[in-house]
Amino acid sequence: VAALLKACPEAVKEKDRWGEAPLQMMKMALTPLHMACRTKASFEVTALLLNTLLSYKKNRTKRAIMSLQRDTSSFTKDVKAIFSHLFALYNNNADNLTPKEIMDYFVHIKMWNGVTLVLDRNPAVIKTIGLDTKAMADFL
Image (cartoon, rainbow, N blue to C red; front, top):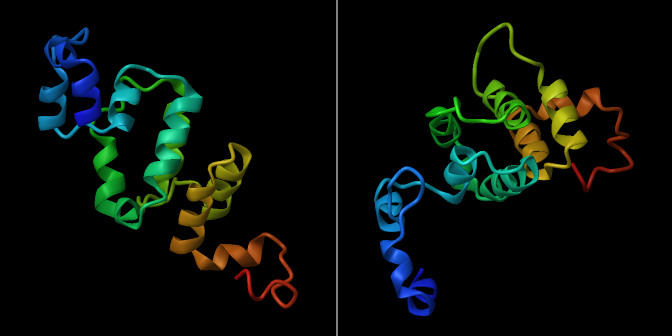
C-alpha cells in the first residue's frame, strides 16, 4: 500500500463506482477477493484469488469460509459454482454435494488448495479415488 501511495498519492482520493475510496474499503476489511466478487471480475481472477486465500491455514476455518457468504448476489454464475462447492464443505445439509464431488470439481478447475481443503476435512475421500495407498504412502 505504501508503495502504491508513494507512486500515485492522488489515488487515495479516487472513488470507485460506488463512491468509496480505497481507504474506506480497507477500513471495511474488503479483501482483493471481496472486491473481485463485488466487481464481477473474471472467473480466472476470482479463482486465483480464492486459491491463494485457501493457501493460508487461518483462511480454511469454517468461520473464515462462511464469512465469504456475505454477499453472493453479485457473483457471476461460474463464481457462484466455486463458492457453492466451497460452502458445501461446511454445511451439514443433506442436499449437499459429497466430498468426492466437491474434490472432483476443484480438480477440474485446477484449484489445488480447494482439493487439499477437501482432503484435510474429509480424509476418507482418499479411499474413493482409487489411489494405491501402499505405493504412495509418503504422499498420504
